[in-house]
Every structure is written in C-alpha cells, then in structure tokens.
Length: 423
Image 1 (cartoon, rainbow, N blue to C red):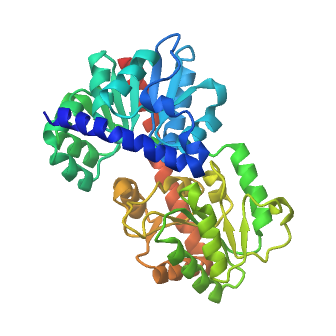
Image 2 (spheres, helix red, strand yellow; image 1 turned 90 degrees about the horizontal axis):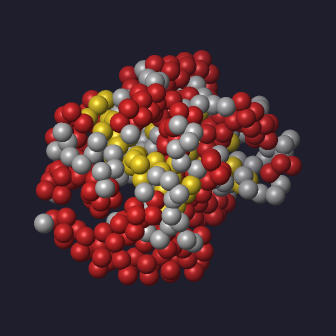
C-alpha cells in the first residue's frame, strides 16, 4: 500500500519536477539537456546491458574502478551508466569516452522506469551505495533482472529513517540479489531493516582500491610548480555552503603564522565556484582560479593566497599537489565526504566532526592515527599550523593514512567476482 502511495505522489509531483528542471535550464542549459531520458525515453539497446546506476559525481567516481574491472572481465557485455545529475553524467563520459553508454536515470515513476527498462533490457542492475528507488528495484525484479547494491553503506541515522517506512523498504531489500556491504556495521543495519541474511556480505569498500596513475602523479607535480614548491600548501576539498567562510577564516589565521601559506579550496558543486572565489576576494585574499587563462603562466608568481579548484574531475590530482588535506562537508551536518583519496597520497587527513556518511572509513583512519578531527575554524587553523611546523608529525600521519588504505585494499576484486558469478 505504501508503495502505491509513493508512486502516486511521484506521479503528481512529476509535472512540478519537470517545470523546475525547465526553470533551472533557463540559466543553466546543461541542467535540462536530454530531459526526455528522465522519462525513460532512451535509445534502445541492441543487446542486454549491465546497468550501473551512480546518482551523482561521488558515486560515479566510486563506480569507476568497478566499471573498468567489469570491462576487463567481460569486454563483450555493454555497460550503461546512469546518473541523476549532469555533473555525474559528464564525469562518467570523461572517464570512459565511447567505451560505455550513458543516460540520465529515469524518474522513479512506474511509467518512466518501465519505458527505460523496456528499451535498455538490463542483464543486471548495479546500484552504488544506498540508492533505494522503489520502482527501479521493483520493476527490475519483475523482469528477473539480478540487482546488486554495491559498496553499500547505511548510517545509523539513515537506518532509523528507513525503519519508519519498513513496509516499503523491506520488500525492496528482499528483491536485491546481493548487498555487498562496506563494513559489519552496515551489514547489521541492512539486516535490521529487512534484508535477507543470505543476500548480505561484507566485502569492504572499493574506495580503498584508489589508484594513482603515472599521469595523475605527473599532473600533480606540474601543478605544484605553479603553486610553489617552497611554501606550505593545504587543501580544503568538497566544501559546502556554510563552511567556506570558516575555512577561509582559518586560512587567515594560518597566514598569521606562515604568511606564504596557500589554500587550495575546491567547492563540491560547480555552481558555487564563482561565489567561493568572490567570498575569498571580499575577505581581502588574493585569488587565482584553476580555470583562469593565466594559470599556466603563474609559475614563479606566487603572490596568490587562495587557489580555487573550479574544474571538474581533477580533485584526485589537486590533492597530490598539496601537503595537508581537509575533507569538507564535515564542518556542517552534511555527513562528510570520501577521505581515502588524500590518504592514498600519504597526506595527513583533517575533517570536521560530522562524518556519519563515511563513519567506518573515518574510524579506521582514526584508529590508524592518520586522521585529525577539528570542530571549528579555530581548531582547524591550529591543527594545520601544527602540522606545517612539525613536518615529522605530518609525515607520520600521512604514512599512517596510506597504511590504512593499503591494509584495506581488495574489496574491488571481491565485488567483481560476486557480480560475475551471479549474472
């Protein structure tokens, strides 16, 4: 019954959702491009595909190693990647080019999902992390499509929310062929809200299998020449509204101790690039933007104090050009973002206190002494100053963070094996 009312609500809301999409598209045309795909009108597949759904940029990046492994293992089976956001879709295209098909995920109405499934004929549905869309799962199950929830995580907060709609969630979880949970805690929560024990395994997080290619390392080294090799450089990555000012204020405090210190700040969402650059300038800070025409000419001129990472798909490389990393979405109650990319560079990892989205990963970094939790702008500044001043301590923390990454690798192979043997 709850599923019926969910679908009814979504049908009623759909015209307003499309109207909002049109309105956003007036100022940002990319937002409304290929809008028909959101209603399930996609090009028909010549043969069944493995459908990989990653809602946005973070999940798309997390899915990339999995998709690469599936392409290596089964090069003859086409893969279709879907996302809800333009940035997620664009990132997938940048990663894979014409090796993979792309489409926007259909809105979760019975009609849109049915049209989509009829056209793409999925051989399997692979969902990243915790995207439980009732009609996507129910209609795929009706077509006998194996469904995989990969890199699955479930915070205590989310589990409590799902328990309130148990009559909707329990049938969905029991329709999933295999839930590959990141940790024991995640598996326990999935079982508590209705998953069947035989369908749940703990594989670890495939995000530990992060790879630093020679190309990425070379680009990071080149950027560091631009930023300055003889000055301390720290990065605040994936920042959200509400924490940018705190970070910039922390940087001003750091500059009182180290006047030549540089902050690389990377807003999580591209529509905020201009705002963050403007905020830094309004606070009297000299700003250089990654996308600026004079970026490549800036080497040797290190008078800028804030470097805004306003390009897409370069975060891993940007980390590698810095000495200390703060991972955003954590000074506010956003839940934090993935800290394993800076850890893979053997960098000290800093975070705010709100990290419930990646609780297990942060706990492992903390236990391995590669993490610093800072609860305020002042605490953040104090921690960065201490690490700049004590290079030996910073190096130890970075080595510890990398050791945690290396100790937890191997989930990717388990996940790929699990999918292949069930398809």
